[in-house]
Image (cartoon, rainbow, N blue to C red; front, top):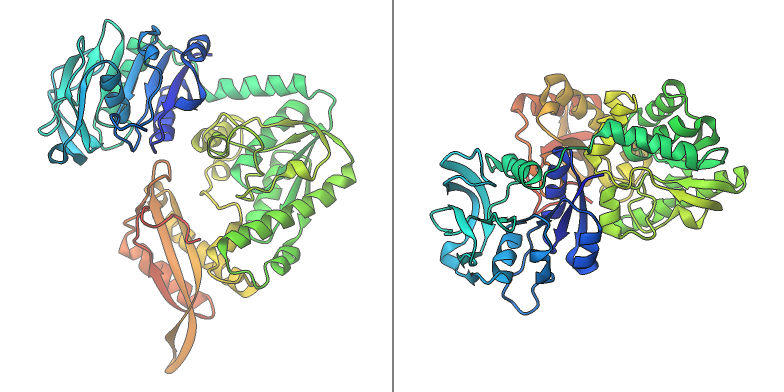
Length: 509
């Protein structure tokens, strides 16, 4: 399979860039510059290399650098942001810090056409984020674009197949960003676009049909998209030799546990054992107010319940987990935690098994959803909103109680209904309710009463590394607020969160 290496220099751009490459139907693999040598890169058969951005200055003593021999390895290279400056620095150019040329945000790009920028108009918009700049391009490099404040916004050495752009083609604000990646991947690297989800699904099914033939296989079904898609994929390969244990924690959204069970068992014909453990989790969470402690308690309780169910099956030949690529990148390639719990507790420590299978570990979240569609799963199931592993426990500020959970489920359902009914769900990426511990005075008839405050939150984001608050139309917010305060007893106030990430996070806890 053709693949491109995304060399990570410690910035926040590696995953967005890799995802954009994969959208071009080419597999992108992210590796830290510290964990791979030039010899390993050459032996890896990569069609191209992309140097990503980073927060440092390339000329500082401890700045992340790779072996300069990579420039003569014969593999096409594209540097982005810091990666562009690093190429210039290693190739003998001049990179300097100058506050007067720093650029952050949308900037006018002037380009004169080149192999990399083929198809660009003379003037376009691009996204800049830099405090250093390339003052002089290295010998052999041709400057192909600039801005009012950046003399080298793009450069290339077409003889060596080395290219650099100071702007960020992966950002939606860069008008022709996808064209940069397309030109590099197809025209320069010679890729053919073999990375397709239907092919991935077919290959994985064939792989597991052979690998897990006649074996007893167990999967922890959390109710989330990742574990559900993993379950369907493995079931397609081995049928009823797969057993899924669905632990209903009582912390899912309204009707979600029933939907998961019905979809997996009745529609997709998967062997599912549902364990109603809501009372156990609520009891374990009694008195717990810290978000980190909630995560720990939920993870430990989940493992206990799952262990009890797993023992009924005896030793299994294979344990399947819904690990995805972001889990691998964030926690390393070793002992991956059960992703539904959101912390370091691992099911591997509580189940007696022979081998581990992680069929989705090479996929980003959006690819997991597309894999689910390729497997024939219902669209509304695959494209459910992102949901924290510990569930509604993190959307109950303070102690988690049954009263709060009941209120939260109803408020969340009302907000979701109104957003979906209006069609605004096509323009926002996540929307939900939070129940707080803040009591506020309200009017019930002519009587002043104390009631709880509900927070509504909606964000727009490509990758959730950053997010902006959604400009939900007032009519939707007004209707949702009126319904929540009139249909749910004990709610006297509804507020809307307008904080982006950063400084906030998407979730409240």
